[in-house]
View (cartoon, rainbow, N blue to C red):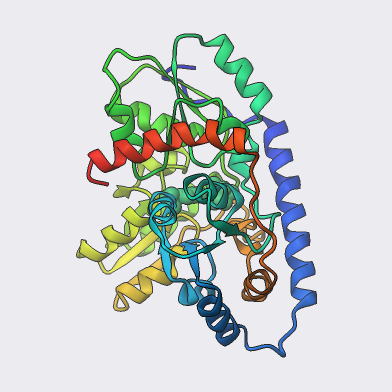
Amino acid sequence: MLGSYPIIKDGVRDKRKQQRAKALLLMNKELMEKNDKIDYVSEIKRLKQKKNAVILAHYYQTGDIQDIADFIGDSLALSQKAASTDAGIILFAGVRFMAETAKILSPDKKVLIPDMNAGCSLADSCNAEDFKKFIDKNPGRTIVTYVNTNIDVKVLSDIICTSSNAIPIIESLPSDEKILFGPDRNLGNYILNKTGRDIVIWDGACHVHEEFSLEAILKIKGENPEAKIIVHPECELPVRMVADFIGSTSALLKFTKKDDAEIYIVGTEPGIIHQMKKENPGKKYIPAPPKDSTCGCNECSFMKLITLGKIYKCLRDEEPEIRIDAEILKKARKPIMRMMEISEKSGL
Ligand code: 13P
Ligand code: SF4
């Protein structure tokens, strides 16, 4: 698969549609269960203080959640914060692999996630058994995996990376080192093009970032020629090719701050626009539209399973809690610590 650009398999797309439908069902159920009698914001603040808890939120969370969080960030920044916090409880407003990473980095802390169903279609596109077969078929390669993986895949890895540090991590390896990268084929292809390294790539993808429509993006650009297109590296190659800037969620946010354009077409989950607007209120941000204009599938249905009501209940009951078998935690910690060390050395 070296240097090639894999074609999406129908089976994979169908499976992702099913996962998305399942997440949407759960989301609707949550809406029906909504109890408006409680002032969630003040109750969450009270419980946080009482229990010495910290709320870490990803940029794809809804604005109301970002506004009550103690810290908002991308996967790398959230991992670094989880590793350094003094709080006794970490409540993770994000998806499961992020909360698991927090637990691995802070094993003595109680790590809570408001909804255990908050998975990740990208992590689920890489099953550990099949990934092991892929590794066996490509012997002698260093296994670099994206943090968006389930823990049994992390255990098989030599180094973990995020979208913020993927390039420095690959470049920290000797130039003749052969690499196997998974699970995101788009990030893998982006890294391969940027570094020119010998990389074989697992054929996985995210259901949000592969949905952006190149045609719709170009139409918006045609109507707003001064707009800049900024996208996440999980987007498909044709979308990345028209981008003015490619980066992790925090890199995109930083770019809109220092760049002098007034309008941006944003090719990632639109939750990030909440921070972009807060930090640069004078600018205009247009979410990149999905291929199917009726589905709203540029939103991550897993991220959106987290609600203020669930955060309140989770802090109150201290459940659901992330629990990881000690032996598995130890094995998964090794490649994550390698990532943390390389990131620190690279000044990230
Ligand atoms: P970032 O690390 O760039 O925030 O990405 C996380 C993610 O899940 C992207 O889909
Ligand atoms: Fe996973 Fe995609 Fe959601 Fe990111 S946007 S958490 S990769 S499903």
